[in-house]
Image 1 (cartoon, one colour):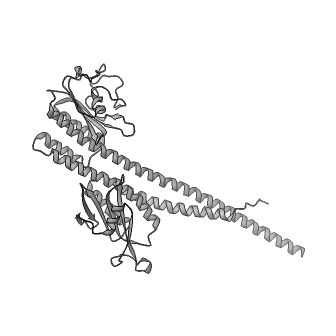
Image 2 (spheres, one colour; image 1 turned 90 degrees about the vertical axis):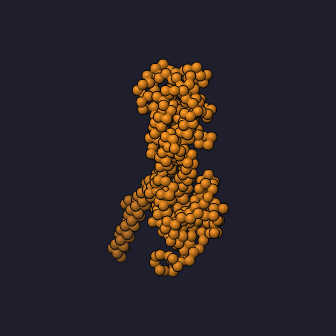
Image 3 (spheres, one colour; image 1 turned 135 degrees about the vertical axis):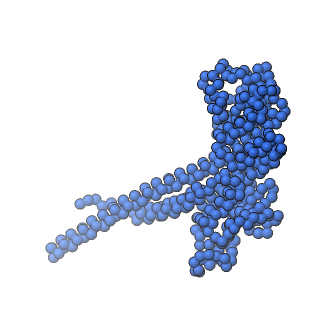
Length: 411
């Protein structure tokens, strides 16, 4: 007779409870992941807000959703119906409380506008006001009206994670909108150079890839300084290295230096001085400039050099440089390069922000996959225990039948 395996009842209950918890957690993570995957950053401020509004309404429901946001020290709002307002003072005490105290605020609402099944359990609604916080600064708030009180409280907690993601995206859009408006106004003048700079600023509002932006900035820099050569590069935030994607165009084949590279770990010579000092460098006699360390054998001779660092506040973001202009560089060319560097810094900042957003999304996707694997494993374990349990019950019944039969024979 096979040996019976005794499975403790509390072990089975623990496993069932864990599987139920994992299923619930996976469903919540899946909802969160779908919310994040449907929200595309980089579409512009208003389109991003509209996308958030419709995504929340289609997923969570309610009667209305309003997004409040702060732009250049002024407050604005936009709701799901497209109504826009300038906020001079918050007349909604719940919204004011959420913003002032940086906390989630709930408040009961009338059910007169509620849509859905008419039953007692669905007769009460609530409003949720989530502050949008980045680096402990409130940049806005989201008010969701007409939310059912019977809504799973854990789902609300998962929505808070999505709100954190929204905060990153909104901060990115607000920051770029504000800075690019200033840059756009600053360069929008009649001259050909400034008109082109304004065009570049407007293009950076919804920019393509960082490499394409780098090439675009380089073309403007060379064109308006009458320079033969140049490069545009950005600082890789994780390593601090200088990445120069533009070296692969026109200058690459003309340079005969061995072991050419587009990644620089050390900043030396004329190109390194603006990065280390965070100041513009302009010289029309490069070979005699005391900041020069010379050029390696095979390198294109540098006669004139102009470079400005791209700065985000005091943080080094990259560099715009040109060389060997037809005429000497002057303050005019210096101003052009510095303006281009300022615009390029905004593009790099956006690239970094969107990179963080992508990382956030990928991390969440991995969590969903991990929970799915764990859930599958626990289900298999439960199936195994159930099989052992049924097998044990069958053998006990079989033994009882044999005992009864023996008792009948001996009787």
